[in-house]
Image (cartoon, rainbow over all chains, first blue to last red; front, side, top):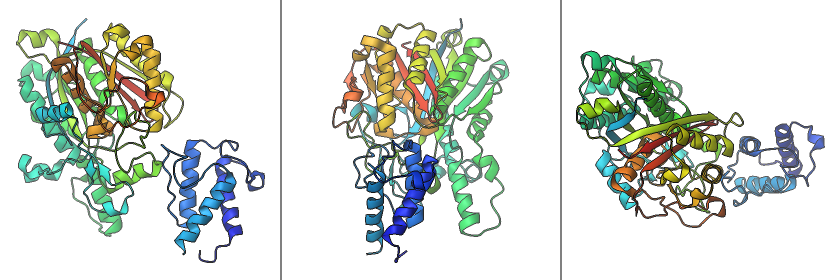
Amino acid sequence: MGDLMAKDIKTRVITIIAEQAVVEPGDVSPEQSLEDLGIDSMGLVEAIFAIEETFDVSVPFNANEPTDGDFDISSVAAIIKAVEGLVAEQHA
Amino acid sequence: MRRVVITGQGTINALGSNVPETLEAMREGRCGIGPLEFQDVERLSIRIGGQIKNYDPEAAFNRQQIALFDRFTQFTLLAAREAIGQAGLSFSGDLAARAGVVLGTSGGGMNTLDENYRSVYEDGKNRVHPFVVPKLMNNAAASHVSMEWNLKGPSFTVATACASSNHAMGQAMQMIRSGMADVMVTGGSEAMLCFGGIKAWEGLRVMSRDACRPFSANRNGMVQGEGAAVFVFEEYEHARARGADILAEVAGFAMTSDASDIVMPSKQGAARAITGAMQDARLAPEDVGYINAHGTGTAANDKTECAAVADAFGSHADALMISSTKSMHGHLIGGTGAVELLACIMALREGVIAPTIGYEEPDPECALDVVPNVARSAKVSAVLSNAFAFGGLNAVLALKEA
């Protein structure tokens, strides 16, 4: 994972999100929100679990205060950025 | 119609090892939630709970019993001993045949499962204790109560997650009402505070790491508890004829299904159960002075529950009191409605309304009188107890003063 490139992170996060949204990865664009993609609270929790398993990181997320944590879920791009941050921290 | 009354109550939970201790803690607004202590707790991100501390099984049970009784069964038997002792009943002959036990639990022998999975998967052992199955099965507690007190009538276990106890007590009430039984021992128990029990809940990301703050704007999730509460439900004329001390009347019960989502609650389903319980008890909304809320401290439950209460009660919603004692004893999952019924009976008998502790900030979506932080003296003659389970299964009990 140490040589994980930013492009790989982006691709893998989009794949995870696309799977929850039941769309092709090519149909997911960075400016979309999870709501735009039709991902509900359970889909979000599953996506976060998949991110943790894929990148071997721990995502600070509480479903009771989804917007309060350090992990920004406001858009696909925000999630990618947050995962990049966690991966960098993990391998710093 | 045959009426149903309560003539005994017993409990063990994080607030106390019997009813007087528990009610004292509720009156004082004491918190029973603290750091969890069990094997592998350091591998959890959630490390608090309403755990029963300084519990010594060997003080209550002999070695053969401990080999057979999971923690949830032990809690049940201790609570049943207190309840049946208070009721002053002994079961033989016709009464034994007309008396049964219906209990709620969600996880059953979760500690037994956890210990034995650890043993075969992690420690690589190829042999488990011969009593694993009779120890972990969900009906173990009900069966041991029936054996200990010779209850030979209808007996079984209900598992509807967080509504298990209320469903069990509703069934017990209906069995007496319909003439199927004269006495029912009922309530519920849970002992899920072990590594696997908490790890599973962690995954849902609905648990708080610091406190259970129902209805407070800064609430951040539920906190699990453990323990049991058991009651003796008795047909009214039967209780009166023997001069029993009647604690309260179980006047109504209703259950509904949301039929919508496996985890998200529904206002309509909850409101229909609340209204149904009042109708079954022949209560007008204005008659109800207190509701023991489901009040889990999650974002979703508390706002949905308040909206359901507002719908079911109309303008009277602003006049009644509603509190969540989970803030003190934690969420006992399948045993929670039973422990919470103690607060309902205290309200009717003693005129003391248990508080919602940990309340810090008003939430406009929970704008009801939640009895924040401090118990209150108030005369109430009818109360409700709400339970809304994952799976959308709702169960509400209505109690009247004796």
